[in-house]
Image 1 (cartoon, rainbow, N blue to C red):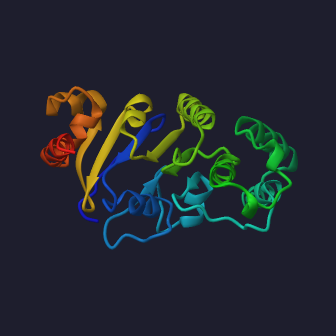
Image 2: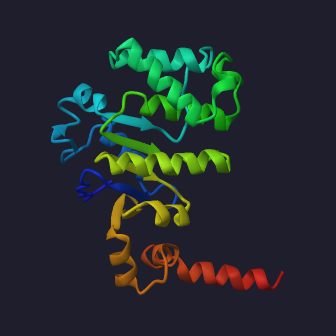
Length: 236
């Protein structure tokens, strides 16, 4: 990763876009302090993620693309454990857990081991854990992957409510229609670099594209390849 210079203001839903291997997940891990930059700095609310990783992690909620949990714990036990790391009062844990469980339709799974749950429900447990402490910055790597339509709709509304309260949400997604529907600003990455960044309307204007999908294909230089593949499809 090289030459990445992003400034994401509060109260914004920001989307990281790019093909597989473009650096989106790496950038997220740098932001939450899981990786250290070879050069430069990562600041979260003005705090250096390398110098003060604990302070930064307290203000961040993070959901990785690859779900990692303690599979022997139940969702109730897992949420309680995560909340304890943030030293949350018991009454706050109970009220927020109850609301998140209802919001994500996890009621019937709360006493089952996480390892026995479906991928989608395990993902919802991790999502609840990333939100339970009401962080000021929420970083979600492919959060809509594996969710059923109802849960995806609930998540979209949850994220929009989050930013309406002045908080920051950063997501990565391959679903360009989704990014266009809920984000105000995007960064398109390729081979570890940001090759386009800005408000959606500016990106469409600069490329002359009718939508984000068309702008993405033009910026990443694959629009011609896609057209060739479509021509091949016609011969089948």
